[in-house]
Length: 136
Image 1: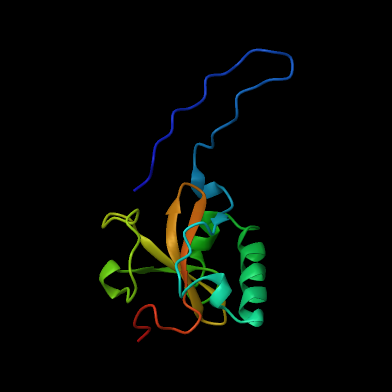
Image 2: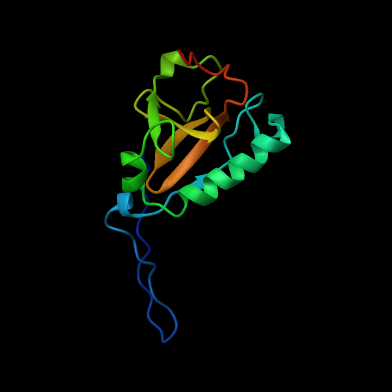
């Protein structure tokens, strides 16, 4: 569920201006948040090779817009939707049924699963051992 924040009131002054708020977050590059990584699917649980691949995946994706990522192949730079009931781990309370879970690949076909808020992708699980959901 997207949160709405009050837009700051502009302040006057020679060197002060209100921050600009994008009209279309799909034109923005993604920012990645790791605050919600879960135990067992954390960066600490990944191999050194997976950690390096994760970093490079973020660098590559941060050069693209959300619109470009949406049109990319799901096993490339793009994503796929994951249903809540397919997750084999505890789902944090901030992820309600109306939140769309997305999986991006970070090391080969290993997925990182999380959700998007505006331009931010909040990574919740790094499925380093393919145990998070049925990969069929």
